[in-house]
Image (cartoon, rainbow, N blue to C red; front, top):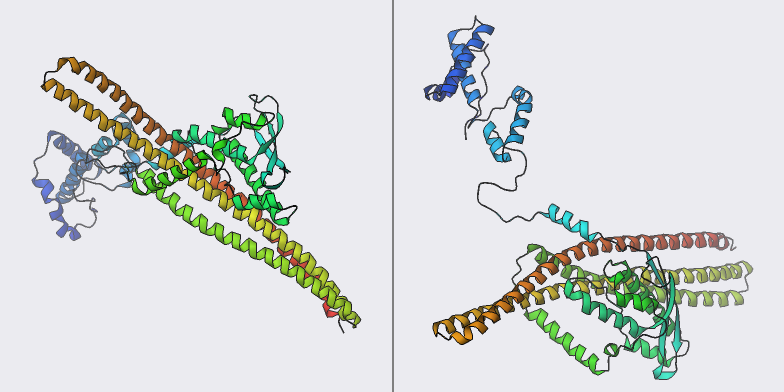
Length: 524
């Protein structure tokens, strides 16, 4: 690269003795016709401006002008050149084929990023372009607003044959529904049947289907055998809230919201066809259990060389997030349980303080103990409400996203299965072609036509498998963009609500204790 040269000042000729060597190379080089012309014009300009300068300074000025007008292979840092030649540079950049040629014509380095260069090609991932393309299609929302509430949970039957039905109320502006408001009764198995149908249809397309609440044989057995136990009531309430969140997330998905099975679930009067595959003790349930075990084994053993760095990084992020969410969920459940135990302890303390106040003979102390008992009763309520907030606002949110991360992992695994199907089809196609080559070598003309037909058939299958794989990969990227956006929103809303409840609880605690403090000081 050429050296950076600046024109020497004309008024310090004595200090330029050592610097004269800097221009010796330029003087020795043969000059081109253009440089000679520029030299002549440079001498003329210098003579017209200053006739009193000596011959040495004129030669140095001419040499500098020769380097300036050559402009190729030298960098010149002159503010006047950048300002004066800005319009000319812009014109040349617009007329040139690429930014690299425009920069070369001025001898300056371009200060913008170039996607194509004349050097060796490197594999680049354009995250900004990819995110824009994905965000335009992934930021889709359902065309119509749908609100779903599960208001009541009713116990039907007695003993081990008992079951719970939930009243599902739907308000929607979707004209595909027969009525703008629908109210139906659905069993828990109906919810699982709906999830199975949606998964069967949409999971192979790369759609993240929200996970339905898991079955709980132990919890449901307690409900069947107990009367009006508080434990069974808590179990029913938790399941009701989980089912409501499941339907809400499904209704928010632009693809799943318009599914006929989902619409039938929300508006069909009467009972839905009984789903036998959801029973844990049925033959289909046993087959499903073995199928899950086989899939779990395949997930461990099936390894694919990932050609897309995006999927490799995203799978690692999902796996790490899945493990941390499980730990956080376990911690929040312990916190909620301890808060409930604290509420129970506060109630016991309130009863003991009240009984002590009743037997206390000292009037002021007896009044203070009674006031303390009332304060602890209020604090018991605060701890109970806070325990519910710990569970429903935070622990259940983490539990939902642990299940949703499982759904994301299922989508990635489905993509791997699609990729394996594609490669298996390519291997079969290669065998068919080898078979045809053998037939041609053996001159078996009667079987060649059939072999060619099989090759054509498998070529179509390979093309279809490749198209399915590419379409699924693109759909997963869109789904992940949407999923991440909703996850951030859900976490933000949940944390804000949780902090508001926590702040309100602390303010109430302060208020109650400040009210009790004068009673304690009044003891004399």
